[in-house]
Length: 636
Image (tube, rainbow, N blue to C red; front, side, top):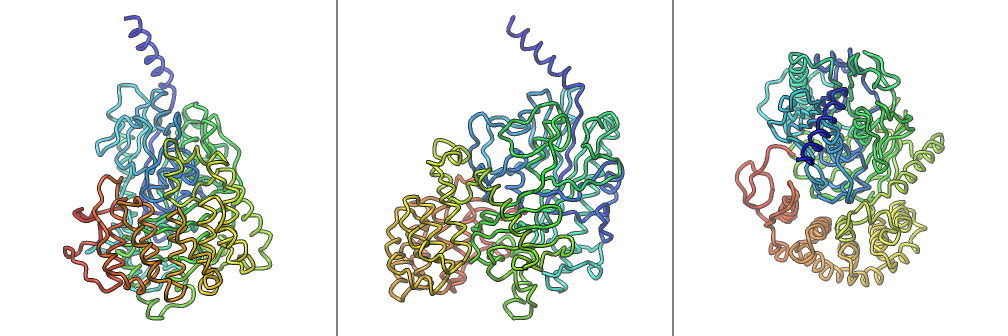
């Protein structure tokens, strides 16, 4: 009886304490950048969000950190970079360290009712109960009487899948849309862009309903409101790409007079802020608003509330595996410039992604490239990448004039490169491990924890080899060959990648070393060696190399991530893979028990490989490649 009384007293005390704290409403939308009227876009029709900006404040330089949904939400929910937690790859699932929490857990402990309507989509395993209600029925109305709330309403109407849905009744005139310089100016591209704006208007209407509902309940002046998009537009070269076009998001905040003492120092109703903020800052900011000090392991910086931190000079972005395709890109921006570092520059920007190719713009863009009908700027997306890119966002909004080799910009390039490299080391970026090793090295622990220890993650040596490999400098070849004998498998992997990246001549000079690497204990090292030998080695190298790739592409024997990597290697062999099409067709393709859509990626890639080899794939009309027996879903 005494224990029950104590528990009840503590609960009541929490409620009393929380009663003086603000309600917080987050209105979020998917796949849209700052294409809103309040951001100066005269083509956009967004009266409700424009009205919110007039009584609140908008941020001109907000970044999502990730240019795709799951890693972006993972950044928000944890207050940490997914590159630190091992959660950067699209649709993966890793553990947080014991004792780490997701931000709603802190709010709930402080007496808040936390609802999420309706998508989670995290790449992290939830450490216990996170939300009071996370469903299509989640709503602040369901809280206890007098209980403060934190509520999210996420609108999917602007999602990539919706801007390409046909038939569609146009509202915005496609003839008046601005086509960015990197896209071809075709009817398909104009319709996709115009439909995107139509969907933003629909989203704006839904946001207006969220705010009206709050006002009608008499809660508007007791509630802090945030609105943001989850990354850039759903159009190709925005979504999935850590350019400013893929990371720049709208962010509007409103503080009612009662809570303007919690507002940012530069807050002015109807004003703008040029402060650099990003998604990693949102969780610390929330805690700061409710008088909870953000834990030291959160990597963001609060920009409002009691624990408001100093503005930061840079924001950071990243790209890892996107669905079935691997890549590793990092980006950083300051007030004016964006720097992009490609660690796998031999892979083209526009690798074939099943889901991305369902957009008409993607298909016509690639078709015109194959037909030789694009200019140099429009063609770049389908070609391999430079090691570094640098753009002046003030004069080059489409990020098409790469200044990385400009003599006049070397000081800026070096400064941003240094900022990037310091961030990699400070945050212990675990993305320089092959994805499968992120999981295998962290077995019984978490990727974040193993990354803190040089014995389990020698970041200095691994990153040094990754930087050397991806520099594409010819005079580094001897170091790459020596790297193939390093004791750390990740260093050996990057050394093999470096030889592969340099193509025919480099592979020919390293035939003995690559042939020896076919027996490496790491599937990633031997698969990279096999791809290099299969593509650029002698005729006699193809059969054993392809045999290794096919054997390792069997997920029942090597695991999901190793198999996916091997399948990418087979696909990179192009028509040479036809030498063992029977072995490819015999690979298992039915997966169960994988989180989200992760299990669909291996079947998709297998089907793509076989189609490219002239093998007929039978599936229901209109259905895209997916896991066998699984119904194709509407949105990703």
